[in-house]
Length: 330
Image 1: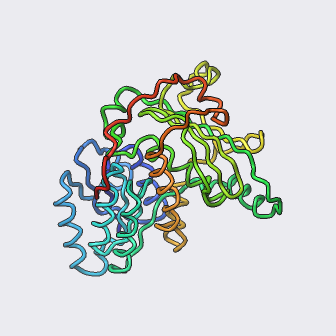
Image 2: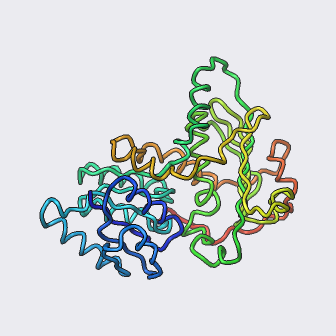
């Protein structure tokens, strides 16, 4: 089948190119305002490339009006977070299914409009929730389903990934464009926690600044202390001494859950699920988007007795949030 891709120069695009290739499909068009896209040569050297979204849109529309074999069936979206919604709409408008990176949207109410457009155009909106496909986490979910106990598990989630000074200058450092730490790097884990432990009953935020956030979640089947950071100073000493730049940990009642390996082919598995009609969509994405949006607008707690242990390492001075949207804008 014919695919098109938005955001060909982005960090995550190679995983989508690999997945399109490995599932035996063809990329016929790609677009990015940046033209450093030599990576296309390794997969689809004959793909048409555009630096203007308008010309890309026109090309897809031309193919839509041609023979059935020329139609673009899927548009993969790897653009900046704040453009996801608009690019999903473009895909639906040219009668293609959308496969969109996380977060599907920044503002939850835009999910309602996308559901309406799905029905209007007769096409699906899929999102990439690849952690749900990790064998170790699938096994954990099965084990949880078999447990009859009504007690909440104690979960401690930590994710620290070093980002340099460029991060603050790029769209990722803009709260308005990325959704901040909660949506830009936390969305993976908020979805995972909801998928494993059920609906959110309440939430606290203990730390909130442009580089790091922490809080407590009460889910149906778990109490979760979480800590997210892009600050290299938060990395454990042993990670730094080994030359590492990221730390990922989730403990279940004090026992470490292994989910740091097995990531290599997850995007390809996501595409296989989509092509088989089993991909995750708007309904799956909604709880995590709504949670992250709520966290971004929560006041921080003054009592830190139940906070994640890493919070005590961070200065008690709360930094201002970067250009947080003041109103419900589209």
